[in-house]
Every structure is written in C-alpha cells, then in structure tokens.
Image (cartoon, rainbow, N blue to C red; front, side):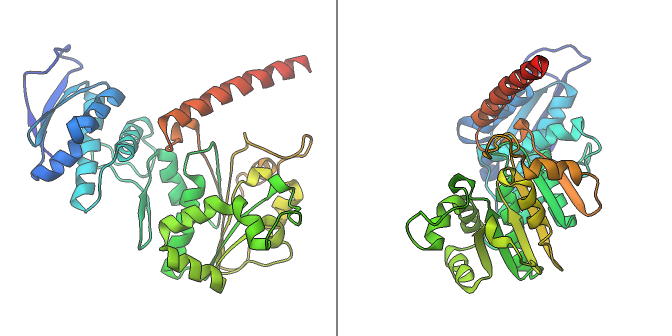
Length: 350
C-alpha cells in the first residue's frame, strides 16, 4: 500500500462503535502528498462530500474517519491517486471524481472484473504516445475492455460519457500498434439531410463542421502535424456516412458516430462494410434522434436485432457515467425523467 496506515483511537467526530472506522494514511513523498490532497485540501474535501467521511490533513498524513465501507473506499481512492502521481501523472478534480466512482463500484459491483476487493484499485486505460486515458467510471472501464476484445462494439448513452472520445483514442492506439493500417471516422450528416451540394466550398469544407468532434478527439491523441499528414495520405479518413456505400473496409478501425441519426438501411449498409482484420465501433445517443418523425433509428433497431450476437459487444452508458461536468449529468436526468413521464402519458392515452 502506498499510504502507511496507522490506527488511531480518537475519532474527529464520535460515532457508534459498530460503524466507526478511523485510521491515518501517511505518504512518504511530501510533494506528492500535497498534490494528492489538493490546493487548500480541495481533493480531501471532495472525498468528504462524496463519501460522507471526515478527512483531515496533517502534514503528509491524512486522518480518515467514517463507516467501514466508505473509509475503505477513501483509502483505495487515495492509494490509487498517489500511485498515479508516483508514475508521473497528475491529479485533477476529474481524476478524483473518477477514482471515487471506481472505488465505490468495487463494493457495489463485485462481479466487475476490474476490481480487486480489499486490494488496489485498477482501471482500464487507452494509451498513445501523446496521451493516456484512464477510465473514470465502471461503464467506461467495461467499454475500454470491450473495445479490446470485440470486433464490433456499440457504445450508447447520453452526451458527456466519453463514448466517442474513447472510441477515437482506441482507434489511434490500434494504428500506433500497427494492429490496423488506417482509421475511418464517419457521421451521418443528417443536419444537412446528406444533401451537401448547396453548402459553399469543396467537399472537405462542406462536411468538416459535422465531423469536428472527431477531429478534436484525434488531435488530443495524436500530434497535430501527424494527424494532418495521415489525413493527406489517406491513413486517417473522415467522411460522411453516405461515402461508405459500396466499400469493403478491411485492416481498419472504423467508427460511426451519432449513429442514432442513421436509418435502418444506412445502418445495415454500414455494418456490412466490415472487412478482414477490421474493428468497428458504433456510438450514439438514442434519446437525441434528429430523424424526421416516423423514420425509425437504425441504431435503435440494431441494438434490438444484434443483442447477444457472437463477436458483438453492447455497452450502455447512463447519466451517472457523465464525466464532462457534474451539472451535465443532472441535466440529462432532468430531461430523461420528463420525457419518461410524457411517454407514459401518451401510451396511456393510446
């Protein structure tokens, strides 16, 4: 264990003997301990808020008081983050939030293969030469592991959960490893009805606004000059979904983003492009369909038809997996609960 644990008998706030756990974690490196606790101990305060414990810094030690379960979750969280600092990483608020989620999941989801109960906290990760992305929620962890083992992965759920970002990161990792020869990124340009001719500029200028999130993720994982050279050489291809028709996509990592805006035929067309030594990732949010009323989403149908098919993995994100900003998760929950009530009312009228 990174932190040396010293048991104390004088808790900060008295609790009943049956539920009290009280100990001191001491970290050898003073600089790392300071970074771990955060400026003005903000990371410890976050631990207190999320886990309902007391965490008080004393030099390079922290006194933790609370019930047995939550104090052990705090210990696993701090040990993991301290080890991250030892390996040259940094600890931001989002890292603390993610580590807390995973520590809680160690107790709530004992079947999760990435957790070792009463041991160190481990998280799946995606690495390129430029950046390493570590899972911040149990679902992200499951998603990364699914990307490693399955030939076709569906990542579905609300905005801000990292579906597209992790998919692009995995594709970049495969390209760097030499596991694939190219990356193909696609989106249905439904906002323009896939009728792009009326827009000004050449084809690249026409479709770039719809594909910007994919570019942003690429530039995060691969140096900008290498991305530009790879696009010019055709090693990285970014194109609207309509451009996939009639092709066989082999030796490639292929991502279809915003797949909820595909029709049934578009989705079938895309999925049947899968060629030899290819990996395919489909991401989307079934709650944000922009198709005309009465047109069925190809993503929704595919999730129904392909559930349980060998070689296909479906990972479903929830509002609790939102990592963009805590407020985004609350916004998603508010919308979902409102539309759930409206849908129920309509069904009753029918």
